[in-house]
Image (tube, rainbow, N blue to C red; front, side, top):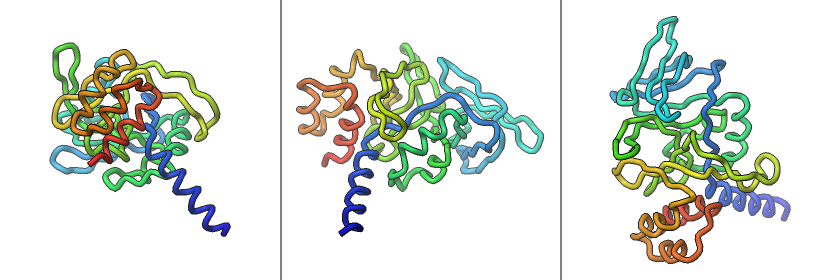
Length: 226
């Protein structure tokens, strides 16, 4: 009986956490190596020397490898795992304990790494190639959601893994092969019905009175919609 209760609690925990966004971060550790996969499949491991930025998003990576400084442009990098600064590490590990994605290395994420990938991003009518941190790795089959370093976070209630709220006021979202664009608390009521057009059930749900704090659940529901 006791083992059955534990199993049920684990399943409930897995479902709840799989419908949450990972916390984004823009402070990185120099105590652990970064792991890059280049466009040609080459694996690179080394220390972050500096990150170049545009609108606070990563536009270049300076690495220290065997005493040599090498700079990589986003176009040269397919994906990368960057170690979070100590202040962010606990948050990453706590909120993803039950994540079951097979596409991303969640063991590394649970060790305090963030997953970033090369993608096109629309900024004020222009499209740029940047490295963006994915915050929904467990339900990113239809829409990828990226951390916006410039976003303000809504109020959190609680401590650690039991916190509620804390969702950012804006994200960058990528639908299919289109460039990622900003989705914010100001425009999401108009955007969500269009994004969910292929799923009448979710479209109907977000067409009434959508709640910004429920955003992860909406995208999770759309991801599993058939």
